[in-house]
Every structure is written in structure tokens, then in C-alpha cells.
Image (cartoon, rainbow, N blue to C red; front, side, top):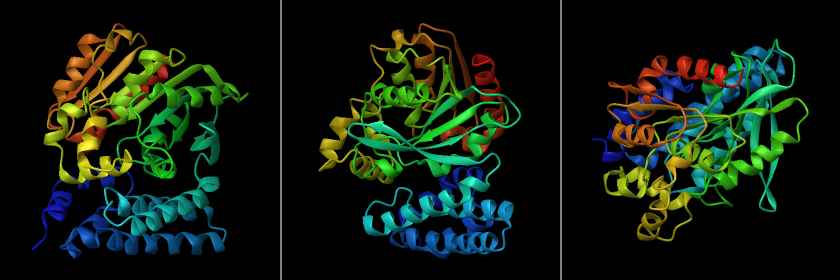
Length: 353
């Protein structure tokens, strides 16, 4: 009989995995093949290796379109192997490294291609993936993409597509506590001090339009976005998808897997310490500072970040706001992506036009 963590994954993760690039039959095969959470990472890594090997074979034959497809799928499958899997960080780190390797190999062959960029941050660098739209002239409007608690830039390929097709560049960055930054930098609540250096970097690029910068965030990134634009006024528009208003206030209702991941990503020594840090991720008393246009998405069935948080945010901001509550949407409304992905991308295109 499957343990509680595997049951939770089977019941709640299908939509997220598949809409972001995992094959549906892979999800069924892998989740049905294990009964213990301790086998999660190794089972998913084994499946990811199949896609990786097909990608490498395609590369060796100069079949670059096929190589990009296989390697992107391998990257996101390796990513989900380590997703919320924090009790064995050696397995976690190996799977993460493979996700980065596969994604990096795919980048020059993607349509449009991507490049790894290093963004100066606190005497080190954050790693981002920059992709530029085809068919329009530089300088390009750009959307900075901020992820959630256990998301990484390798998970955002299908999200990027919506903006790229509408003539916007995308810059997906592993921020503190995420992906390639998770080992050196803990999650921080004052995300304007993360996005600020990213905007500085954008301003240094001749082919990016620093007067047309948008910000996009999902899940915990749905907090990072509004928090950022309350203080960072160089951002012209922001999309917030299923973010918390007060992360600490939700602590007791969070799934164990989520709390465990926050402990690790916040570099806390205990759950007690992590809970105190979670309380800092709070929009109270700053929402009136949000003046740029804001597009808010909420899932009516979201158990992680309830729709009431989005509704509250929409009522408190000072600038123009568009609220979309998808009544039958789960967390990030992954199960109803067609209800907001094109619409929010159209909205961002209008704001940055």
C-alpha cells in the first residue's frame, strides 16, 4: 500500500507535471510503480534517463529538433524527480544536476533558442535562461519569471512559450532557495532585493528594452511578484498566480512535503525556525504601494494558497487590477491552464506594447 506522500503525489501532482512537459503515461507508470516516497527520486530519475539517452542519440546524429524535444523532457523529468524530495539531498542534488545538464544541452536547439546568463548578485551570481522572440526587432520587451517554493527555471519551458509567441523575451531566473541558487542562498522575503539586480542586468543589455519589463510569478512567486512591485518601480506590469498573502498564516494547513521543503529552502535548522521565517512573507501594510497594473489568478479549489488571498490582494492594491478566479482550478490552476495562460500572456503583451 502506498504511503501518504505517494498517495498525495498521485492525487495532486498529475496536472502540474503534465502541463509542464512530463508525459502523462510516464506519470502513471512511475507513480504506480512505487509505494514509498523514499523511492520517488530514483524512479523518476530512471524514467528521465530514457529521455536523456534519446536526446543524446539525436544530438549525435545532428537531429537537433528531436534532440531539443527529448532533452527538454528529460530536464523537466529530472527536475520533478527531486521536486519536494528533500530527505536525501545527495539523490536530490544528482537529479538536479542532470536536469541542468539536459536543459543546457537543449538550449541552442530550442525554438527560439535560449542561453544561460549570469546575473551579479551578492558577490556571486544568479543563473538565468534568456530566450528572445523571433520575427520582431530588438530591443525586446521582457518578462522576468519568478518561480515557487520548489520550482526551477527548467520547469518553465511551456510557460515561456506563451510570452515568446507574443513577441516578448523571457528571463527565467533561479532565485534564492531555488534551483542553482538553493545551495548558497536561502529564501528571502524582500524579493525586490532579488529582482532589483536582475533589472540592473536587463538595463545593461542593448537588445532588451528596459522601459518594457514585466514580472511573472507562480505559487510562492505569486507573493514575490506583488512584493517586488510594491518597491521596484522599474517593473511596468506584474502577473501573480496563486500566491499567498501571508505564508506564515497558512503554515499549519500546508502539506508536510511543502513544509519540509521550506525548511530546507529557507536554510532553517528546524520547523520552528522555518515557521518564523515564513511569517515574514507577508503582504500586509504594503499592498497600497502596488501601483503598476496587476493580473491576479486564483484557483477556486486551491488548498495551498486559497483564493481568498488573491481576492484580498485585488482589493488592496492602488493600481489597476484584473482578477481571474478559476472556480474549478487547483493550485496554480494547472488543471485549467487554458483558462489563464493565453489570457494573461495577452494582457502582458498589451501592458508592454
